[in-house]
Image (cartoon, rainbow, N blue to C red; front, side, top):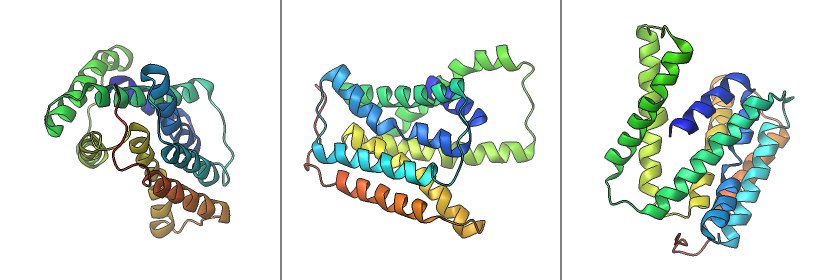
Length: 217
């Protein structure tokens, strides 16, 4: 949890939004590879094809309308965040700990934050004192951007294949694009619309897998 968020925020602070989102969207493919390398787990063909379709759609959505400027350390951090999150997902699926979802995610987030605190003190001391508006923003991100999504993620993990589950966060960039179109009057290109349709097709295809997801042994 600590490594994932540290790398993710570092990458987001130095990379263009489309490039950061594209690198993070490699997570389903990384989970597919890690599942085989670490546990010899075979992912069903439909889920595998769905993951490939989703990633292809994300390329059309994120790359087509913008020029991407690479920052190698930040790009490496984005990929490391995906590897870290994917590995954690596989380990949680394998361990099958009999713990309710809310304390499970709460303890992980709390311990991850405590692990990052010494680094924050070392690298950023003195720590900035947040104002009221900053605290309100943190509160929104904490509740709706972290706690609620992770809680739903942890509850879905026992029922879904890890690769299948890793596909759903890719709806986040699509949601941002749709909100930009609806609220900020931003335009969508034909390639973006095509990519969005490909992403949805990949998600639907991944749902047509066998009723009972494969388990990690």
